[in-house]
Image 1 (cartoon, rainbow, N blue to C red):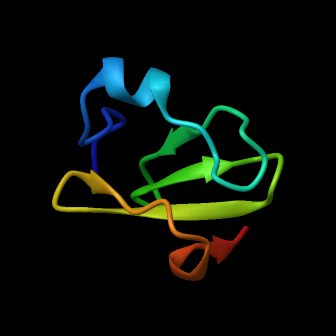
Image 2 (cartoon, rainbow, N blue to C red):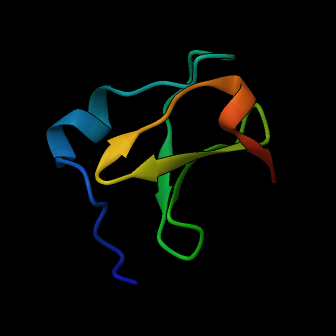
Length: 59
């Protein structure tokens, strides 16, 4: 998997964790957006970030 996020870099810069309101970072190994503050990984499906807490997994 590539280090480049499957979503637009401008959008990635605007996204925040729905729990902590802190920035998210792309993790290519997981294929997910990570919230270090919340300890959660949010999936990206077909290029769409799924920022639902019930869909996130603990990291």
